[in-house]
Image (cartoon, rainbow, N blue to C red):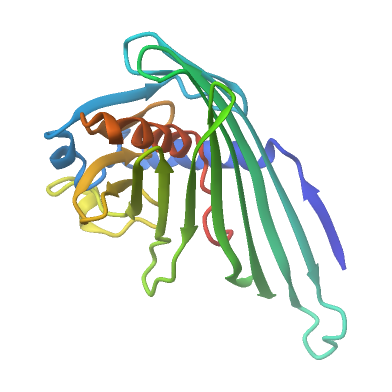
Length: 261
């Protein structure tokens, strides 16, 4: 059996290069998530800008001077073995794991106090290879969790996970709880109607719709981009801080997908 850790920078480099390649293939036009404009029409548009391409760095929230810093780690482990398969010398089977951490702090006029997030993600897959053909299936689906603090005191939590799908999409669903807010999230995989991206289902999430207990959309978080993400936030103060915290966490998270390509 052979195995080894993939260095902490190799995974984000691949993620960035994949995103840049997708932009080039699309003529440098980003696919906008379906439903964002409808939610933004009833709330406020806030952009998260200056997101670092590499692991650590500063970012900005809106245009009022709200700023933050993020630190990210990403690791991988691969174990493949063909021992015992004498009749198939080109056969290998094993496991691949991806895991990492996202930590951030942000403060400014848009934030109540000083908000910090301690986030982690894990996922594992089983993989088989016969010659040049490889198949993979999740064994431990993606789980992304965040614990938020405000001025050092517990403030809320975010949970996001993979859900089963019979399509090429890798859907996510989750929950954000902060103060009186208890909201759900679901991933969006189609582009805005009329755009190039609306013709097909994207494998990765273009963004998330945040819904209240009645099922009404109260916020939208677009994660398709390189150094900028778009948020559509509610004006209701009882919901705004929760949706903003979720938006920042998801904007800084590099989803590793359910299986390696």
